[in-house]
Image (cartoon, rainbow, N blue to C red; front, top):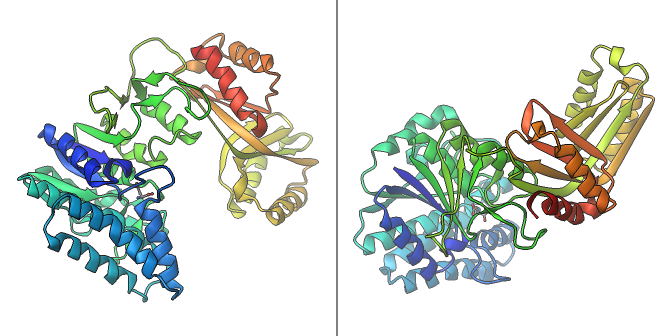
Amino acid sequence: MIVTKFGGTSLSTAAQIKKACAILLEDSRRQIMVVSAPGCRYDGDKKTTDLLILLAKAAYMRQACKAQLKDVLERFSDITDELNLPDWVFHAVKEDIEARVKRMDLSFERYLDLVKAAGEDSCAKVVAAYLQSLGADAAYLNPQTTGMVLEGKAGGAHFLPAQSHKLSELKHLKGIGVYPGFFGYTRGGDVVTFGRGGSDITAAILAAAVDAEIYENFTDVDSVYAANPKQVKNPRPVPEITYREMRELAYAGFSVLHEESVEPVLRAGIPLCIKNIYNPAAAGTTVLHKREGAVRVVGIAGTDGFCILTVGKYLMNHEVGFGRKLFGLLEEESISFDHVLSGIDTMSVIFRQEQLSDKGRERLFARVREELNADFTDLISSTAIIMLVGEGIIFLKDIVARLTSALLKENIYIDALNMCGGNPVSMAIGVKSVHLTAAVQALYGEFFG
Ligand code: ASP
């Protein structure tokens, strides 16, 4: 059984849906089709999910929302008309969306999730009806009755793996199941969504639950590239990549797949294949546990929005529990960190800057001074982190020399460098945000030029 996920651009119009369904029907192993909500049809268009968010905000504030409702419904009526589906298909979608909008008994967060989820839910119903109209043995699968049980905050829910036995029953599915991505239900029966782009997560959870042979993800690019095409012109495609490499690249801005979507298939050992809806014959990128071939850099990703907090205290290395106190403080301030570097009398913690307001920064500094008796505290903001990624690269003898000389040629100063044997798959390099693109280009030139 193959779980095949189609993203929003792959389902943005009736023509795209036809293409996606034709691809699906080419291989009878493609039995679970996970769908996003219809995405952008052209540059500057709005995704259905964004239209639904506008609708939910206006409706919940009791503002006029007819125009927003019309925009949403038109996306679906255009599609159902062009697919020549019987009238009841659109009417069912319309009734369902209108009923969601009227649910004023929910908190705003829950309400927003309920309305947002209508994009995927309606799309799955429409696609299932279209497949049936082609004579396929296809049905809409309901996340509530099939066991997509989630917990956590609205708009950022997580799957409860303990519940996967119910989802596993889909292994015995006869025919094709069309499954709406992006949302599930709490144990109490409320609709909750994953973060944006979360249909990737749904598909990964399903692939793991049914022990799929492959998790296929159709998007609008031919493959994963060795660098972000917005930062490097015509970067090389990457035919094979390991899960760990993919995770490291996704962390630093590779947006092909949702960052959390790799975990379920990684744990289950299921290969993930990223393919292009516009070019399905292209090999795409396969994400595997192990890649053959020599140790090499497979990709470079960089993103900004970080800061580096450095705390210094004479004889820090003799003080039992200093690290715990610093991390405890960060925990109390609700700051999650990404990298830690340390010297005998200093510790530097790199984290996302958005977690620290001006007030929060003052409070943190004061607490570090008073509670840890630190001699100095420093914060470098506007930092970018560049990830140099490849299984085993930190054991290459010349890796540091090559990366530093490539940056030196561009006169780029390194604010932080994190490499450790425990994580031989990547090196993290901190530079000033203004140097991000130049640094990525310099490193790409060195390792791929
Ligand atoms: N439709 C949702 C979004 O736009 C989820 C997804 O497409 O995966 O974020």
